[in-house]
Image 1 (cartoon, helix red, strand yellow):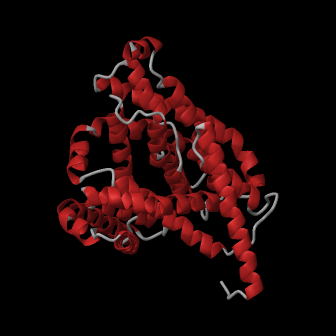
Image 2 (cartoon, one colour):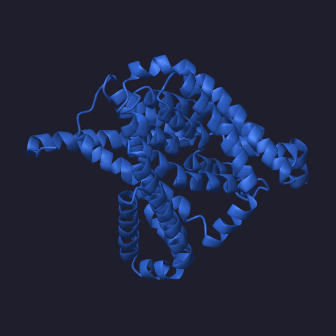
Image 3 (cartoon, one colour):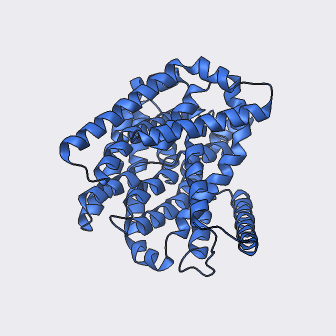
Length: 391
């Protein structure tokens, strides 16, 4: 990207300022109606991208970097919610629910990709799109509906953690395959990537005290710069070693524990919100609305299957854990929302199959709207229970 003169930079600042103000208005509106802002950000990107009603001309490289930082911070903040001990417990007790979740929700995308005569690797990517729930959207749903202490919430969190760990294996494998490496060199690269994930996970579990001590300081400025620098450094190294940068960021979050984790979360939350909004906006900017329309029917059919598969997952896993029918329905309904990871996965395959981008965008749009609505209705407390609680 070439250098900009003063006039060019002023235009860039004006357009970026208008874009951020627009995102703020959308976030305010989403907060008022109690829905996730993600579908609104995607729609804004569609409106102001190529083929939209008012295409913006600011530097794509700048926005792309901001978008990637957004993904990294989203996963880092998720990692802050977990300790090493909690991760180990999750792996030991939740594997059956995680396997059912994978089996029921990966298959629809994989089969749809093959039926649409997409490249087999793209079909595998589409399976990932339909499989992974949105940790960001679901965390917001649980907070807004005040369900963090509900009996079913630990199971929801367990399934989300297992999905994120599955991504730690899935992303390196598809990354190697996308580069078209030969069999043996590909297997070596996958093995190296998986070994890297294991090593980084072990380091995250055993260096918690040292990492937390490195970040900790009485100055908020030092904590902010130390944490952000460490997250970006580890994410970059992970990317170099053929592991997702987002997974590196997640494990840094796991490695920071204690009071400093809450402080880091408070300091980095505004940056996460800014760059995450930029990520969804940028994804929308890349898609021509004309390409979205032919995909709406397929996306709607996949979305219906996505609702059914997650609800069935919740019912089976919930009843297996001793939850009642309403609580189990709440698990499935809360898991319906898809978001950031589905978009990330789809972005990997757009060069190989242009249809996967618009299809994933439409799919996420539908389920990012349906997810919070279903979580509100299917997970609502019975009136009798509420009356008893307030008696």
